[in-house]
Amino acid sequence: MAAEKSQKHLKLQTIVQKPDSGNSVYEPCQCIQPSDPCIIIVFGASGDLTARKVMPALYKLFLNNFMPQEFAILGCARTRLSDAQFRENMKSILTDMQTMPPNAWNKFASRLYYQSIVYDDIATFNNLSDRLDILTQKYKTSGNKLFYLAVPPFLYETIATMIGRAGLSTEADPDKNWSRIVVEKPFGSNLQTSTALNNTLQQSFKEHQIYRIDHYLAKETVQNILVFRFANAIFEPLWSRQYIEYVDICAAETLGIEHRAGYYEKAGVLRDMFQNHIMQLLSLIAMEPPAKFASEMVHDEKAKVFRSLLPFDATTTEKNIVLGQYAAGTLNGNKVPAYRNEPGVDPQSLTPTYAMMKIFIDNWRWQGVPFYLMSGKRLKEKLTRIVVQFKDVPHSVFSTIISETISANRLTFVIQPNEKISLTFQAKNPGSTVCLRSMNMEFHYDGTAEQTLDAYEKVLIDCMNGDQMLFLRQDSEELCWSFFTPLIEDCEACINREKNLCFYEAGTEGPRQAKKIKNR
Ligand code: BG6
Image (cartoon, rainbow, N blue to C red):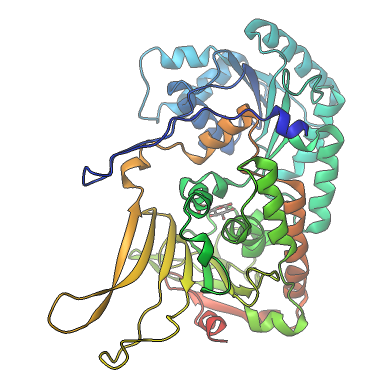
């Protein structure tokens, strides 16, 4: 209840659409009410995530007047720095940003502070607490605190515990003075470690205070899935096994593992992309309508989908999943190395960088409908897309006059790039005889792309406003792990592991064996 109570909904301007003007013009939905005054404490303030994502997002929010009237940002890390040095460091990062209006930086910088911290030393957290008291007085932030853990995951439990021990996670009244913690994936590496992490977080914070980020949920096109499904009456009656042949979810990447061998070697594609991002996409497509568009109710419906996933068993695993690893190849005209030759990767590595699987949702709506899930690195193109393939017409009345079969309708959500929603349908070609052709009805995001919030900006606004809709709830997180953990363990323990790993040339569509999954 506290979660629902403390949730403050953003006031949104309605999208202005001019349907008669040929090209539609959209004004983006803007948050017009900044959150309560607060202090944002960024752990890992001298690290890469802070520099690349968190600080640029905060600065952009500031430039666009989305930050609260009164706020302070307190960077924390092991490095010893003064406030002035921290401000200089942040300035050097942010000067790359194109928008640097005169005076804006000085104003923003005056709200930046730094406190050095030793993550396992309670004394330094007590110092942090004293510092927060001073800033709270200065900016009248009523004790509202947002702890952002931009640190390696092995530090999550230590930091959360220390915050709790220093008394900083306590909320006297969640509506008046809140304390929230933000963590990014990976949330553990299997069901056991994820449960352990959740237990530790919950010793200091209640569930309504914990914000587990999945950046896919903050993508505009992903947020649009529920609006598309539940704000239109015409699709929902067709949204079931009666009319849908299959659903295909793909997240193809051209990137390799970059410099993340240490993490990726242990994670592999199933932990890195499937247990989280792909499962979230699946839940949005498969869930039942929530009674209201409220965070807890949406999370309840997602959890039901995860509970209904039909587990793999020994007889189905091999038939329904293909794992692959990229070999050397060419991408955009450039030669790229094999995964095994990436810096830091074991030359004998059996870590999968690609997976294609067929899964089923064991419930009334989706009985027998295959969901094909695919993700891989170093593929031909970057494309995240969901296809809802409808069934063929039950009977072709045109069979006497045209020889070809009629293509079934297909609804496609392109999540990135070139974000769009398209629906194919059949139309008659103009002319004296009856010839059919597939046409597309499309909605493009082009007009709004520049103005929309980037994923980190959206995440930060929602945290400050106490809106958990786009974050992961503990039960869903663990349900996804309980589906994937046995599968990952099976794959990792399989005696034929090496034989079962399909190597694919970088820059291609992935292993050819994956095609068989759809034909089975
Ligand atoms: C991250 C994964 O969560 O998502 C990366 O750890 C992956 O391996 C990335 O590249 C993909 O995100 P996006 O937004 O580029 O599709």
